[in-house]
Length: 86
Image (cartoon, rainbow, N blue to C red; front, side, top):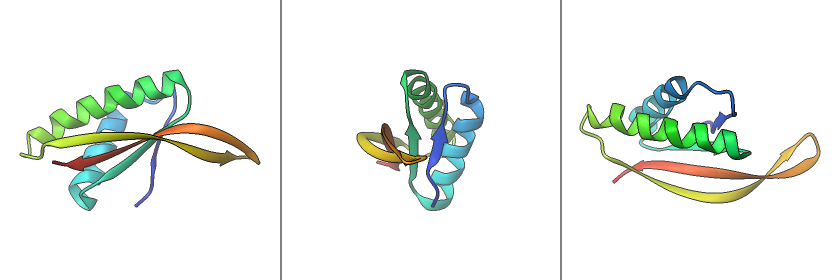
């Protein structure tokens, strides 16, 4: 399962659809964002995805954590959200 990477310019509805699709297929999704605007887009997308999944009778919860990510040789701190059914 791939990590869904969100940027500050990501469309929330597209990310929400990706999250919902991955949760339906794999029973969990991982969403990663670096920076305030990316985290904002990710949180809005997870709220939308929760609504999409609720229509299918799937109630999800989110857990967040900090992770270090290597981008072009530099270590950056990202926030990773794990989305799983309750």
